[in-house]
Image 1 (tube, each protein chain N blue to C red):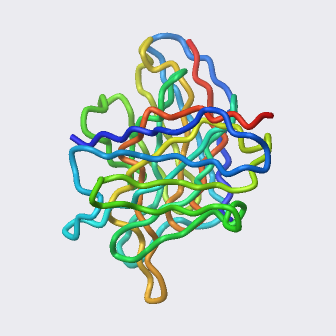
Image 2: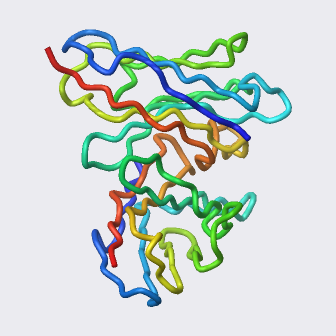
Image 3: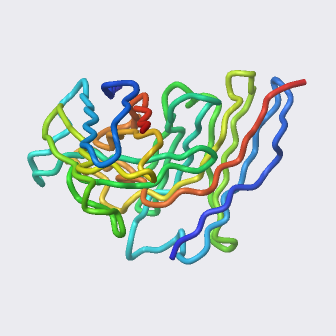
Length: 132
Length: 112
């Protein structure tokens, strides 16, 4: 049974960098037998879901173009965790941030493989407020 | 980007009655190479993360009651709850994972 848990500061000042970590238990994020996608999705208060980015250990990764210049996702397989950094935050980045596991059957074309499929496991979410 | 548009935005259904939620994608999300629709449905309750209900447009996730049915192909999809129960109240989202950026519908709020 996979479990994901977000951690990090709940308050970030404008223009600073938001940093969150997702600790995974029950499965290895570095598995080479199943290339799950590991990623981040956010939800502004009272709003819908916005995909931030996903990576898998087959080498596929991608970020939402709307955030690409400010976002990075990295992983530490020794700790079985992955992290999100979002720079130059504004009030518009205030949201609940979910870490998520996506299924291992991302679509592959001759040119590209997409990282992951449906989200089969979610963290509980962490509210991050951007305010001075 | 593929835009996912759900209808209606909100829906009130009597207990035991049928609820139908529609989702339309701005592009075809059926992949002919494996004959799969890259579409999932989630249910979200207040203060909780979304919960996976349906994937590959029609496959029910483990433990999801069989009153939930996903259907459709190409650009038009439907989530049907055959006999509404109290615990089905929440917001429902569709999600395309055909191409990045992965995108979600705006949500449909389901009430009794």
